[in-house]
Amino acid sequence: MATYGLKLFAGNSNPELAQQICSNLEVSLGRALVSTFSDGEIRIEIQENVRGADIFVVQSGAHPVNDHLMELLVMIDAMKRASARRITAVIPYYSYARQDRKNKPRVPITARLVADLITRAGAHRILTMDLHAGQIQGFFDIPVDNLYASPILLPYIREHFNSNLVIVSPDAGGVPRARAYARRIQAGLAMIDKRRSDVNEAEALNIIGEVDGKTAVVLDDMVDTAGTLVEATRTLLEKGAREVHACVTHAVLSGPAVERIEKSALKSLVVTDTLPLRPQAAHCQKIVVVPSFKLFSAAIRNIHNEDSISTLFEIQH
Image 1: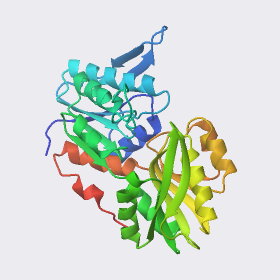
Image 2: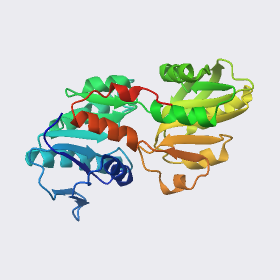
Image 3: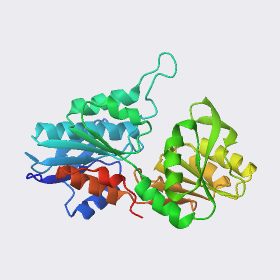
């Protein structure tokens, strides 16, 4: 067990989640000034002693993404220069994760660049949830703990969608996740064969699997502009699904996403609070938020105490 103190700090990306984690851990949120100078540069001032402490900095990739990324980097640097013993970057939603490979000529691998920036700033380890691509863990030269949202979402699915279910992956890449959920709740499995025409644009072409007469639950790691989700809903209903719901870890919900969801035949969109809902999304009756603070709190406690976090991948309900 660690003999040095745990301290938790947060930037401005998701203060409510940070406060819930602190309450669950029964610690006070660390005092820090996180603001900007008049020209927009990030201003950080740690307002308490962190020398020799086990520091956790909670900062998600919420809008505005670049500002919050810079806040994280500067906070880590400040902690390092203040002689913190260990710094863990708690990043519930890892931004730039979709840029994880060169899928066309002359494009960057920005997910790797962000990993290098965080490591270079002085982080000793990363705690995140449902990375868009699992191989991003290999972009870091420090330990990465990638939590799954399944202990949060599966109990909700069992409680609210427990009749004649089929779990639907929106693409081939999401099939392993969908298969794991389907096996846990003994539901059917289906996949949407889609062709992406451009960034944030996709056309659903076909459904692989049986959905006729079933309640379809589309499972994904994130929803951004909701174009794929809305198209998937339309296609599933055309193929005979009784109704369509979605369970998504990260509610990016940018651009026309909320308007599309409200106008679509999607019955509900269940998301976690790794990202705070924007005002328009917060008023959407179809969007349900399930909390993640207990899972992050348990992971932080285990990391601090040098215990395994593998038990957190188990479904308790």
